[in-house]
Length: 134
Image (tube, rainbow, N blue to C red):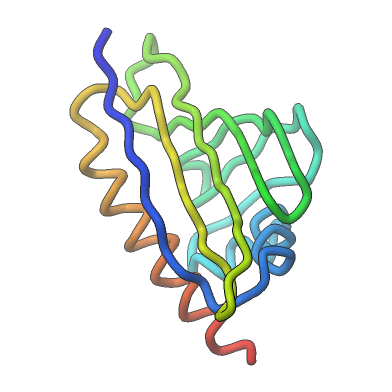
C-alpha cells in the first residue's frame, strides 16, 4: 500500500518547554489550537484524542521539551489503513522554537489535506496563542 508523508517547519514564539507542556495538557492543547475537546497526557503508552475525537492515537515516545512521537489517525482513515506516525521535534532558537512536524504512513492521497490542516489548525493558532502570552 502506498503512503504519503510530509515534513513541515514553523517558528513558534515560545520556549520548547512551554510548547511541550501545552501540547501534552488537555486544556492548553485545546486553547493553543482553538480546537475542540482534547484528551492527552504526558505518558508513553497513553491514548489521546483531539478536535472532539476527529483524530487520535497513542503516545510512543517522549523526550522532555524536545520530542513527541505518536501514532495518529483521523476520522477519514479507512478502517484497514494502518496508523500514521507523527513526530514533533522542538529546537530552541533565539526567538523561541523551531517546530518540525514529520508525519509518515499517511494513507495515499490524504497528505496534501493534512499539510494544510497542520498549518491552519495547529501552526497558525499556536503562533497566535504563544505570541499573545508575552
